[in-house]
Image 1 (tube, rainbow, N blue to C red):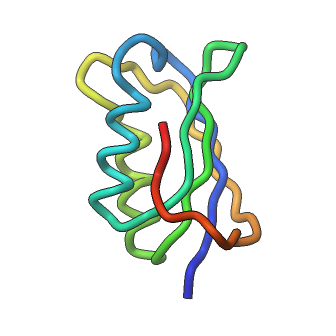
Image 2 (tube, rainbow, N blue to C red):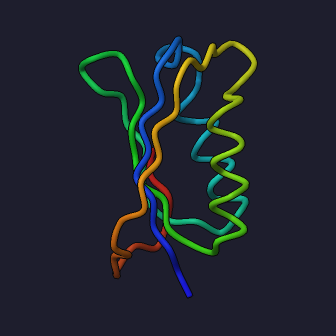
Image 3 (cartoon, rainbow, N blue to C red):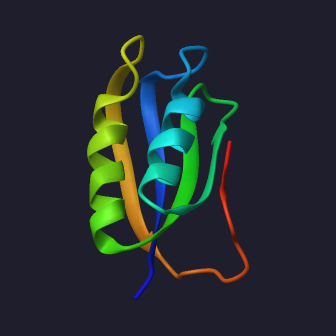
Amino acid sequence: MSKRISFKVAGTVQGVGFRDFTQRKATSYGLTGFVKNTEDGRVAGEAQGSEDGLKKLKADLNDGPRSAHVVKVEVKDIEPKSGESAFDA
């Protein structure tokens, strides 16, 4: 059964390849959803898929790419959506 999360990542996460990193990781775990920059300097998005895939992505969000400095990650469980076929950045 698919689960869905929303996430917000704070720290040095814009201009360091964080969205591309998140998209690659999520796609490798078979997740769908999206990631985007926010006006307040964070990265936010949603991901959907297996519990195991989401668990791996959450760990990746806490680390980020090498040039990022993650200060805080907020994750919430939300209702799954239908009709997505990819993870967009």
